[in-house]
Image (cartoon, helix red, strand yellow):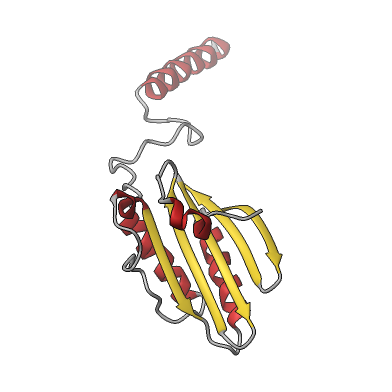
Length: 168
């Protein structure tokens, strides 16, 4: 009799577990995450520009110029996010590298990295954009940092394409 009751209790417990698991009451904590109800925001020239300026400041660089004034006119302005500034002489190379590090911490991936003469090149990519980071340590002219993001597929005027693209 005792054995039948144990079997009956086990059967009822198994049935209860099946019903509650099927209803989601005891859902496995390792199941797939529920997608966020909010879509990922668009990664526009404005958001890219704001991101670059914020990381440059956090890296120790002073505010820079984000304008495209003086450059050829055209639709290409909507797919380019420039930032240019003069770096403090004390630790300008460190501020440049700190900015690149912050970009990498926020999903910008290094595509290429090298140095030639007085220029350090870093090219990064994120969500359909390439970021051409340049540190110019030219004697007698100071230190300049250029962070220019160009959206994939952007048709740059030939006059400025060489300034933005990686020479290597």
